[in-house]
Amino acid sequence: MERRVRVRFAPSPTGPLHIGGVRTALYNYIFARQNGGDMILRIEDTDSRRFVPGAEEYINESLAWLGIGIDEGVREGGAYGPYKQSERRDIYREHVKALLDAGKAYIAFDTPEELETARQEIPNFQYDASTRGNMRNSLTMPAEEVERLIADGAQYVVRFKIEPDREVRVNDLIRGEVVVNSNILDDKVLYKSADDLPTYHLANIVDDHLMEVSHVIRGEEWLPSAPLHVLLYEAFGWTDTMPSFVHLPLLLKPVGNGKLSKRDGDKLGFPVFPLEWHDPASGEVSSGYREKGYLPEAVVNFLALLGWNPGDDSEVMSMDDLISKFSFSHCSKSGAKFDFKKGIWFNHEYLGKTDNDTLATLFMPVLAEHGVAGADPAYVAKAVGMVKGRADLVPDLWTQGDFFFKAPESYAEKDVKKRWSADTPRIMEELIGVLEGIEDMTSANAEEIVLGWISEKGYHLGNVMNAFRLAVVGACRGPHMFDITELMPKEEVIARIRRAIKEIPAPEK
Image (cartoon, rainbow, N blue to C red; front, top):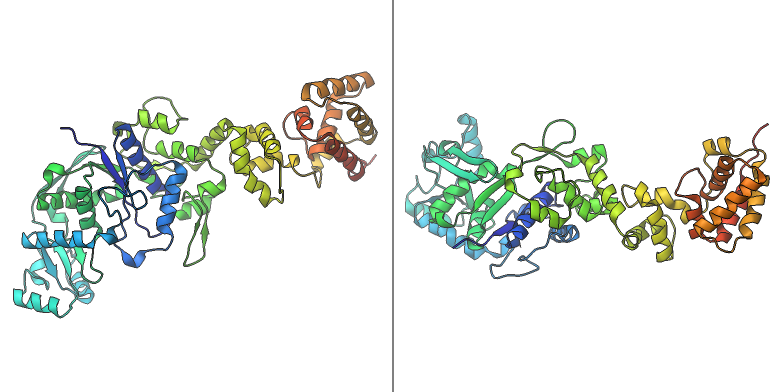
């Protein structure tokens, strides 16, 4: 019987969700949906010292904004819970005991000072088969002493006993078979009595097994831990249910070498977090894609193509497209440069395809930031529809169309110098009279009447129309002039022309 596809995204609530983690969650979600499987969100909060208030809520909100649906999790519930590791202590204790009873693990009492001394005395020290015999652990100490220390409340850890000189084989769906000699692995800590919690290594394996995870899809940085996880599956006797491993390529710096970091985003001016993050400890605010004016569909499309390609020339793809086209066979083994400029391009494409009413809703907070309150949504929708083709991000709609909402407070100097002559005020007064006589201000009708007047008077078309635009917009920019005047109240258009006549100084002769 074919195994049901069940994947999990398992972040730690130690801060904001990095964009690399978002891509991992996205690939898990796409693969699950492609195969009619389940997407699990598991919170790995075993490191109690690094817990950050608000981080778990941030993770949930980020995934929801991006459209990455969760089938089972802390919020959603499910038959395999609890989905927060701090609530699974009894489960982990049971499995730690099973390893100890089977001789697959042992108790170690070495203090931090003793471990540091070993590191100084032994070059390239690691706690393994070659050194464990000289350390303070249940393999070297009488059982009575071990029991006494535990009864007296001495702190200890449980280490996994790795046998030397073994070839450990990890089958990865992107990288193929990876073979590692067990001599390079140390006896990892699986459990710490200090906080009565397992480490990542034990909790991860136990939870993946009990939650019937079929595929472990995670970042390349976890590849070195895969051999240990294979050995743990063997130690528990779970080889028949071992998941398929998939280690995704790293996201690399846009410039230079190394892994993408927050510092890169700060330096080059792009976010590395999906949502804005307010650090509860320092008060530092980090920018987010949502608040910067990116659309979630664009972010998803952009991230999906970092380390994967559809095998054809497709670029702009919906979530449904990604689900239908996705394949690990087209994932790269090498890291993917984080081309943030391509992310802006994707957002431009999606912005242009978004319906005007939706864009108007997204644009309302930007208007409020600029002091525009109570704008008519229908008016806003028509305005953004005229300028969205020139915008990359939602805030750019203001840059491109601010004149729809505020009269110019100044006039572009270079346009004034080029387009405003000594005769312009007189001609603009005449234009006011023409506009006042137009009852139907629809674009085509107003254009026919105004251009007819210009021709009849023998005026230079470019000079008149550019002066008209300068007076209404404040610069020689924007969409078709008569589309602007169709949307804008005629009284406002005329008032702006009158103000320009008054405010723009007469050119020097």
